[in-house]
Length: 133
Image (cartoon, rainbow, N blue to C red):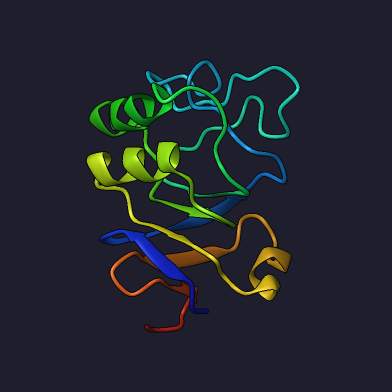
């Protein structure tokens, strides 16, 4: 599936999908990679090694540095997919070297969580497990 590349690189992992935006500042623990935002749909789940899918980011610009800290602590997502990238998440992905894409076709968002995909931030492509691109 073709989207827009935001942050370069390739990452493969299982989809972890949130229908709600994510705030990385106070929303994700940078030491463990666990979503800690109270009442968030992903509360208690780890982003580590997952392809993290959510509509867009929210909150403080410090969220960019939390994404960087996740990478430094070895608990970052394998890749990030947003419906529409915004600066906080894009900057965090870029400085952390986490592949990121946005603007995928609507059928992408119907995939089941846990489905394995590869994100290519260089080309903006997302390939389902077993497919190449």
